[in-house]
Length: 231
Figure 1 (cartoon, one colour):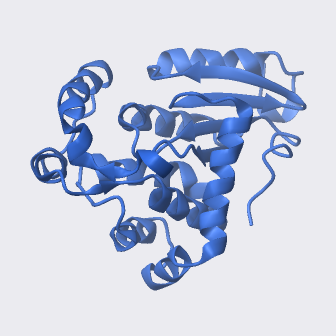
Figure 2: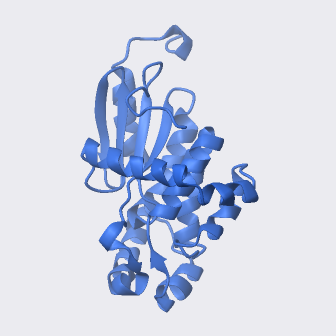
């Protein structure tokens, strides 16, 4: 259903964005990665991989970690400039009953990657806004349908696929890839050129810094006359 991780980057450089929809720092990084994509989409393949930050024994009510989040979100705001929405802060976080699990959002991403792969970076951005601005309940599959519709996936079709085991397995496959690659925190970004992998960033980076890392890798490639380099 999706292209092989190892095959990506054979025809042109590939950029891999390991994230989790429930990662607060990824929420802060979301505008950065979206802008990077807009700048480099013609030069690189982009793939978003869901990391499975909250699975298994980590799944639970947000109230269990609310005290930590109440402090941490301010740090994210100060460092990145994003704002957490009142529906999240005064609704989801304050009420404390919503179950936090990474699986539904990762399943939603797997569906969009099949249906509209060219919009997966945009969808990652939408998923993070859904959780940390709009305050959706992350465990409720129906909550993601309006966001899938924004990238062209019909809501009824999307909800049918959310119930289908193959898409959950695709999400779980991405969790395994994350572990195999050795990603230990989110966000993490790699590039692939030919058979070579290049670590671009771990943790939040502002756009100029991230762009410098990307451009450094691109500048190592042989000049392609179709890229418009030079006169």
